Image (cartoon, rainbow, N blue to C red; front, side, top):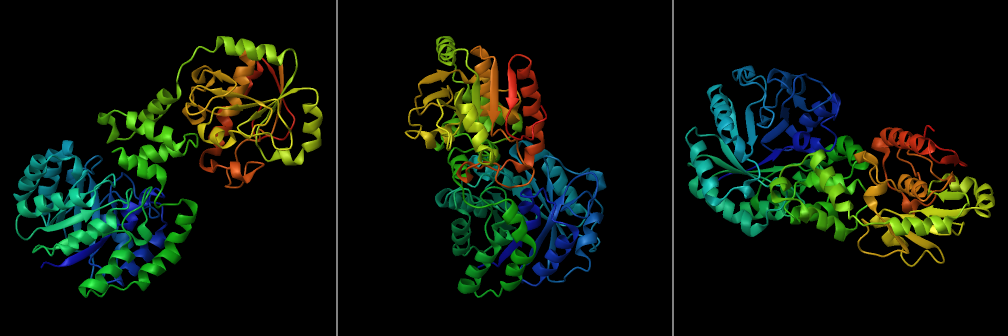
Length: 522
């Protein structure tokens, strides 16, 4: 049986959580703690970018790693990762002299194999240890994977890695890939595994790999506290404890726990990682996890619609994410076109010549109850995405599937107005989503704006607005009822700016009067 090694990749792969901005003190302290654990490989960060920032675990040159690893521990192999989707210039790589990183791991997609081979060959010539990482290994056919292994056998790297990029490789498929790799890799090359946890397979796969008792060395990637984008990664402390209990290793767990407490807890509290339903859905639909992360931030889709949307993404686009593509498919899914002319005419008749009071669910409703109640007596009242609180509205408007699902059977005597993207329920009035949605992706389905545009289309001359408070840059409750709260603090300023601009345009055609405080510039 070969040796079993662990590689910590917290600062590199965990860095997707916080854009690698750990802070210089944390990066330096992290490495010192890792040196105390007994693991062999420590990935310091990406070999990537054009300028060096000591607070970020990205390093544009091999020289720039020195700042955070000197003095080096003799017990660690220091590693940097080079991404072939954005590689540093080949000529910028300097010869190995032992003062900086010791190993370079090269990650590449199938389409970048030729360029990766050139870089890998040069890395070995310069004297560094080399690990070849086949990104999205499950996307390779058996023959493609074997051909790739045989090609890199020619330069004899130190290691090759199976990479479960989307966290969807289950044990049976994983073991098949392991057998393919082990039977085709040249002797002396270590087999590595890098997993993600979208389907909670990382630990089970790592355990299965170890229990094969391969003759070659095995190396398993893991992150302290499982830190990683979305569902996170294999937990270093868990796999280390497993190896201690079953394979007589002597990894020290205490320094890992200190890392959690001293360095990672704050990041976890600010941006949770771990198992989640959206990440499970993205993996089960063979989609890049960033689709799930992006769509979840919309806070508008039910589980059924979330799953439908991901399944409807063309296979050619599922593996590669871009914000533009995600927004395109989101808009296409929402735009379930209907002809709503008769509905708008009917609403126009229902509203008559009365003023309209819009009740949005901002927390200012609680502080202005008497003023709002007085207006409600003489106006037609329309609540947005909630049932009106202490005010019993005449209508409830919703363009948000998730929120409307919570309101079904709770609107009492209020008539419901819903947009055509809500496919799992029916309302008294159904209007066309795309006729009232914004062309700005960040606020495409802001329900209060959509209602204003609908009222304008129905010929309403004046609206009073209560509870449309705007978004806060501080993660505090923006809603009168905490059960309605969603966190948009990271993009509060942009949302406020875009919504303010649209309200100003609406005001050119319909008088809009805010009766409660607001952050919008109107």
